[in-house]
Image (cartoon, rainbow, N blue to C red):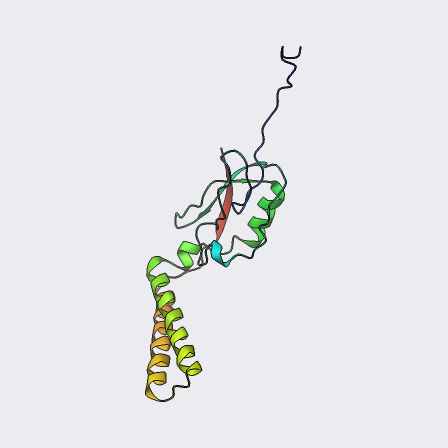
Length: 160
């Protein structure tokens, strides 16, 4: 029996949305990175890639240290691809807040060395800038040796 207004009942499926570019129920959520990461959406190219597949389920990335990513609607091909290529390192484990602050200091120190070089500066200011960059890099190495920075694999799990 068909509805009185001749409308056919429909099932609304959400589209696979691994990186937040798809629109679906709730509208465009904007680009995202699994469990954080170092680089935000400003580092993406101009082309915004979208998966046209319907989602086969909702999935969450987790690590052994308890970090948990956001709930994502994914198709099974993306589940396989993410599980194979993007599950080697938990971003919060490999770059905890203390390490991220030092990493950003290293980036600024290295930019200072380049700026001095471009400006044609030689001598002690350059040696001081290089020494600072190397000292900060050593600090990151020590964080790794102490286990503060570590590789923690991720597991992609289906959720309700």
